[in-house]
Image 1 (spheres, rainbow, N blue to C red):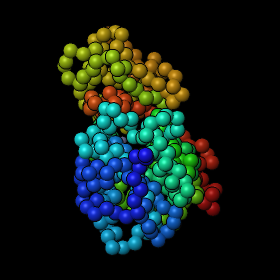
Image 2: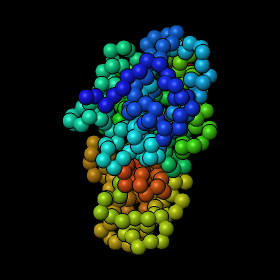
Image 3: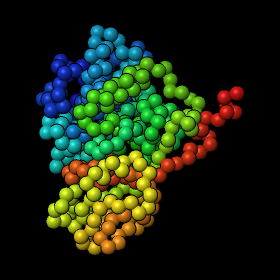
Length: 345
Ligand SMILES: [Zn+2]
């Protein structure tokens, strides 16, 4: 039996439900199709991580604003990990990460469920796809994309001028939907920030109201595109902490202040108390690039090249379940993706 529930209206009590009430209200992960004036539908996924409620609050605000009125465009919403939401967790220990299951291959009910979501949306047609997240460190709001194409850049730049391009990790929602339509992942700051909810809601409303995503290239002045060059992990058998504890690696305390700042080589990330305890860096092809990005001298852990970190967090559970951070470099858009003066005249 499929894990997915499919409904065609907003359930009673949904617009005021707290994340931890969704499982009881919906009965499980749910795809909700709502009609609107224009077709095809805008697709939105939210709560893929159970402790990231901004997408839910943004949708609830939008539905309240349109109560009793027709939506400007049809809207299909996938409400993801409601079991983890009940416990305010990213995922439960026995579950796969709901934003790493959007690729075929594994014989698990969660993979089959999201295959069904993609197949259903492919059959109905999709205008654009938006996956809404929060993160735990100090990060600006930004949009991520997995295809460097004009509609994707246009959609991303409607949310923020900071745009992150990545192709790993695989199995993220935006990568699956990139095969169907322009797709972005929104990072809306930390959970519980009112400004994140407002920003996501305004963006959803704008997407519902536009007739088409602009076809002309973006102006390079309007977007800063960063490309992920490495994912950084603490190996499972290496102990770490942010305060003075008996561990192999101690990170500097306010490390999340480094997010989205271009940091020079030599920047100290922490202390190493065991010379075999090192950070693991992988590039997008899965190659080990640890030596390119970190150096270890006299117990000091420092950047070996100039990079811009993102998603640095002090949350030890997130570091264990996901990663320590990503490293990015600023990238120049290829000329065919840049709006030039010539095209204007
Ligand atoms: Zn997330």
